[in-house]
Image (cartoon, rainbow, N blue to C red; front, side, top):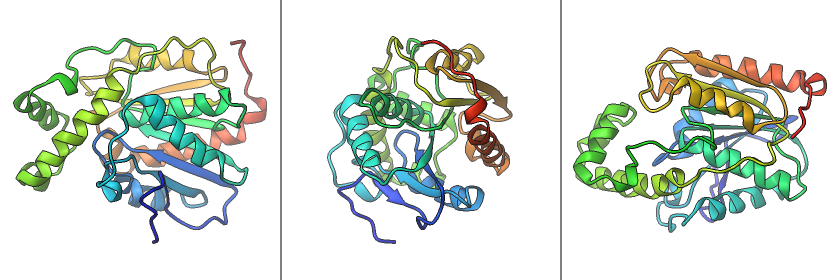
Length: 259
């Protein structure tokens, strides 16, 4: 796999598919966290990972300074691709980035994703509640990381990797925690919203409020698990595949609500 570290889009497979699937990873993560799941469960889609600057294979690149800069750069790369139906999926921080990219594409006159799937994240109209990760000291931040239960012990036990994790998490949280918007123009995408039943950071109301982010239908599902329920076994991605395929198939008959 040839990877251009100047680009956000990382191709996961070949391009001989009718629909593209873009994954927006959670904070302080590489898109390759989702590589295996997508290649297993999204067979039949042309899959791309979004690699944020300062993350994964782009570790030497400066972090994005704000959501507008980050989303605009990603939107430009996606819009430059040959026209094809596409789907976005973002988890946690990635859900907010995916939504803002979809919003930017539509506002610029480009085509938005047919389906936007989000998980483990409040709707962007919901005010952020403490703790704000980027404001925590290192001891407090690491306590929250351990509570999230989404970081490998090999990282937590390695001082160099842990320092990199803290730096990257602060950078992402600074962007995500400041992203609260008044949605005057909901996007024209079918929306799928998921969370874990035991996620201490996201309430059922936070998830339901995603319904105001789209002019089309929005389904909400609360599944077994914590904040990283999406990476706990195969159940989530099996459901996501079914829901995405159903959403794509029902697009033409999906009622568009007034903005």
